[in-house]
Amino acid sequence: MRIPPATKFTLGRIGLFAILFVILLAVPMPMSRDAGLLVRLMIAAVVSAIASWFLLARWRNEMASTLETSMSKRRVEKEKLRAALAGDDETSDPKPSRRR
Image 1 (tube, rainbow, N blue to C red):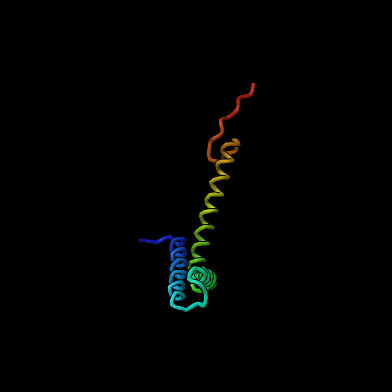
Image 2: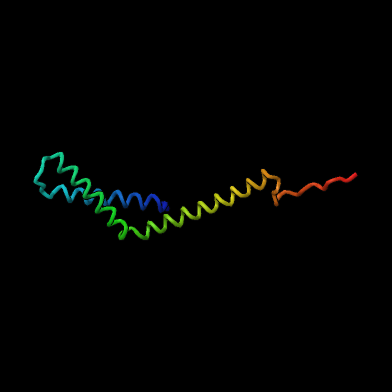
């Protein structure tokens, strides 16, 4: 079973965040419980974003190339549709016109 690159990258980002947050739960913070939780969440979010830039670069590049391929296919399909709607469709055989 092949996992799409976007799914791998997203799960990797979530996994990094979760691991960092659990690690930060063990770090004592000299503030109220709610404020400490919020600070830990923010730290985990920032550090996981920076870490994913380096650790998940290959998956990010795979996802980007998949998106680029998909977008180029859509662009070609869109141009074909526009040409067909405008009557400039190259794939259809034009009927010969009759002159009087």
